[in-house]
Length: 198
Image (tube, rainbow, N blue to C red; front, side, top):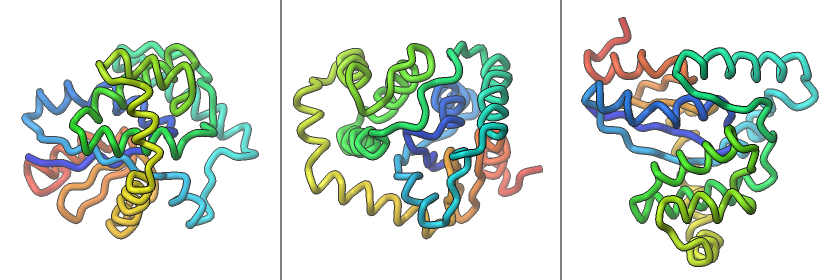
């Protein structure tokens, strides 16, 4: 079974998926391709900025994440710093990581530091700490991730996501079927296995 996991470092609900997906995938016998993209670009294109100037909705989001995290045995310190000024760069690092084969490790490490230690992805000290944790050289990665080729690749992946109908993160794509939200992961797995959700 194959599933594409479309996510953007900067998406709060993606924390829940990022930290539990490897275990869920193993248990389901699922092959997952981690696909970082720029969700901010997608939302701005669609005039859909979900939590800006919406304090009641933002408060609900943090409480909802807290409740769901407890179900998964996760221990975030909320609210986490949000939004992320360096969202694009954090995802350029993820694009480089995907090309070099360490995207899952980077994504999980940067999310842990963000949600459990309050350190913003794409900035110091999160960037150097998470890269050293997974055995990558921060100076090399930081320079390589700023290359135009990497920025162009992130833009291209974002375009692909939009063509598939991905409008938010996390999303799961099985063939032409899009499932949006951490709470739709089980539906996506059932579709990958059975060709239907129920």
